[in-house]
View (cartoon, one colour):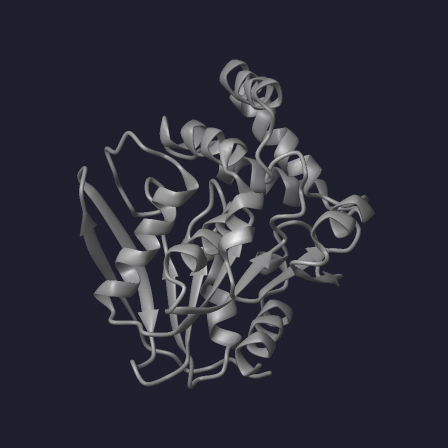
Length: 266
């Protein structure tokens, strides 16, 4: 696959509570539209290389979630649903009438919620190593949620390190893990902590029961568990991949672009 010659522009949309959502867009309105949502503690630049490997006739929107990257907000609500409304505001601003929404990690949960609130706009939801981590994504019991929140409140850096380690198959380069840790631990606060809290309280099973669009999950084979397959395999098309760690969209942009292009062509 060759690198496309794309011209991108940066834009923003205003929401309530002094929320400014910034995003990058390339392509024209009459092209098939792909929306890219990054993971927790990351930002839309994670998709720069991927965008270059996508077919030139795609319109691509890469969005910074609130208080990530260049987006800013003073909101008090940090739920997955509210992140999804940020994406919905971008789609409305760009007059998108149909699209595929792909999200990495926490962005996968956001993509599911976008599909739920915009059933007539989102044709397919794609999760990039998201949804299958059973200690994070399905709604946790109150005891489990409090334990997770306590861990991050008491030792935020330790909690972030645990996330990085949990997404790193055996043999992952230590320097690479350190790079991810340093990026994610610098997430803006208090939004970073509140987003984690929002994720562990997100009712994934309820959302999946309402989302009617097909959902495809590209999961790191070495991390994917049989328990997750047994629990969600009848609702989500789960495709194991061997493209790197939890952050494979960054590590393997060309391979990730091929996966996304395959969904788009479907």
